[in-house]
Length: 397
Image (cartoon, rainbow, N blue to C red; front, side, top):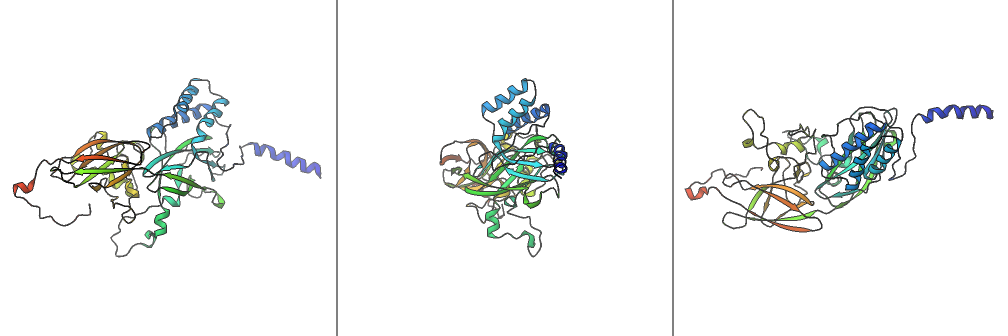
């Protein structure tokens, strides 16, 4: 009887050896050895380039060592060293088993976000199924906080949002799919992706982070999600001192961008299916050709990287009721906008009687508040010519 049991044990060993199995603790990521070094090195180099593009570059020593590894012979040590370099920046470790079931574990990266700003993390994929499907991120905390009108007399029940829903749906998430990365998994046993996260909140917030590679690929027991508690650091209060042409305090419109493309495929004018994100990015009619093809606008006029993020604007909750369907915000003299440290392009004005002006705004690190001056400039004063508009009703915008 004992002889038969031993035979059964040894017979099962080759099956267990076909795949790498790891017992994973919270915040730990295993080193996977069964991966071809050349394509893995190529993925690491693309990730290094893409992290710089999205505004969250690796430390100089990490990028430098990746470039050094590219110049050496590729072997098992290359595979191990790449993972040692990149795993500390992974928010999650995603396992896709041979049956294409997905499990998610919290990664080694410190879960930090910035109020009103974007933060990019790596996601490490162990693709035992070698599938080439799209990796999709999901979270109940990333559900929309607004819905397009259906012009019906009553709201659709599925669109109802309670106060609790609004407080819980505070995050915007997007897998970066622009160049030099790709939308789908490559089929390689191990590769890295970039997850981008944005929130308007501050303080401690828990995100239930999940992934799938198609309908029905979630693992049983809700193991395709991992709860992660974030510290959301406060951003900088940027006070806008706005003066009219005659020096009096006034209100103006502001389009604030950082010029970084985080959605779509990274092209100049990507197709964005989500109207909550795409609607505000429609260029003004004055900047379109009559056949609908847009000008190649300078970066300060491109509607890429809009702040505050339109899809997370909510008049019922925000201090200032900004609209999601337009890029601009409106502020009166002395009012403010919250921005994380960084470099921004600002377009400002006050309607058709004023010149549209542009400036570059540098928000420094290590400060709680800053002030900036904006001087408006008229090109015409119609009342001096005896003309008064009869269009006196209030527009939505």
